[in-house]
Length: 351
Image 1 (cartoon, rainbow, N blue to C red):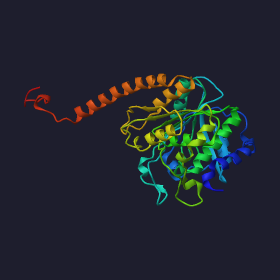
Image 2 (cartoon, rainbow, N blue to C red):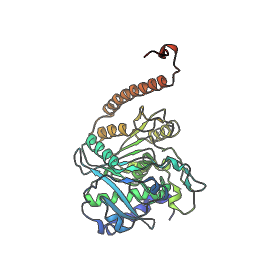
Image 3 (cartoon, helix red, strand yellow):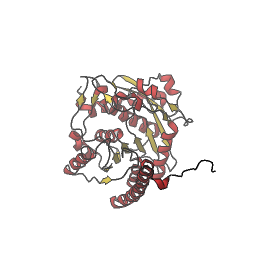
Image 4 (spheres, rainbow, N blue to C red):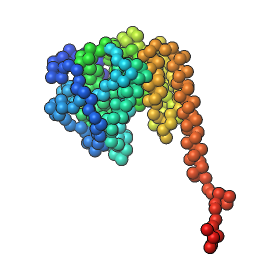
């Protein structure tokens, strides 16, 4: 088996998935209360036994490339229920990876994760799209076991694919809508190239223009990044697929000009209709576009036209532009030196 044939490998796994899920068949447990997933655990990798996995709500015990994983998900029907849920795959955690040593380049960037926030994101997408939404925990973070050093690798891609198969079996879903931001924005394209049941695909601020697979260790799927640009023709198997790409032109983390724009151009050259929605984020690096993604996904799921989606996105762009101007004005005011007229002096002996 070669890693370039990951779609074929996944189809073999699907054939035996029913047996894998016998122990977890049926509807998932009720969601638990808030849980804090500690950064120390995500930095060293999350380990879990099958029994520990089964004791947690909304989990899947899966085997990929001969490795066992507990995949955590957060399901919401806050806005409605449907047979084709929105699946949310969020961005990378813990900062950059040092590939030469296969460790974290700057562990100080790691943060604890509050699962209440993940549920809140699922609730938001459910309300916007008026259907079921599922926040899917990525490898090694957000409650899913494994090491997050393997993010955006063949191992993670196939784990997420088999997780979708497991969810489909558990809830009898017809298919999925996929939203991904940043690292998740790359995963959703990889998944759509492997599957035939994706309807709406929205990628925000994604590193999606990488043109080839890169193996950091030969024969290790957990250290082999997957290629998506060389397999664009596979998207055609999703006959009803509708794609959108969302970018902030001032993104300082994943540059639009070198990552999203070339992918949009390649998709259009391949014959796909792909709106490229340019937005304005309010975080310091102009990278977070999840609110825009929820609007776009809602429009796609509800059958709104590209023009209607663009108009709704434009409203939020204008609001965020006002917010950014206000923040910039406040920052300038704080950093400006005081003048004599700004200073109140007090004479000795006077109150």
